[in-house]
Image 1: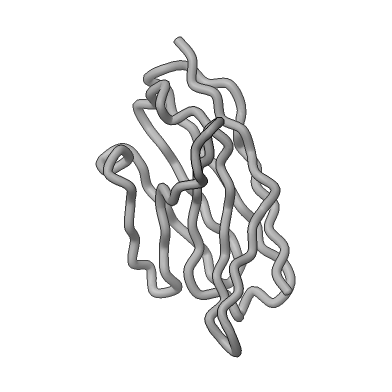
Image 2: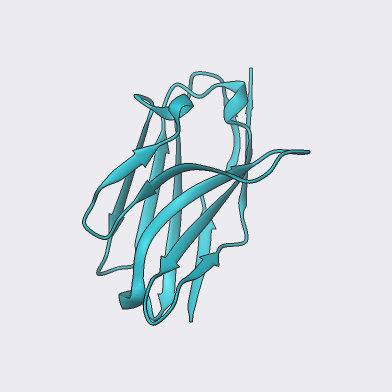
Length: 118
């Protein structure tokens, strides 16, 4: 089992920066990919950034050039920094950790709310 706890959300101004942190506990050695997802009212949860255990990263189109995702495998942490925040960055951000062996399992944090306002 893996437990995830996010932090770093809040109210931020347009054009500002935000750092979201997620700490995993439990069987962190079983974690492969970690990532951040965003959900807004009336929409499905969508992936915004992921990072593999080897450090390969992927970003949703709207965050390319504005976001950086990093992780520390030994500590079980993943951090997402977003710069030049826009109103459409608003949403609840969820941390996710995937286990691939002995079977696939996705673990989710409780979410942290981000509101970008001018």
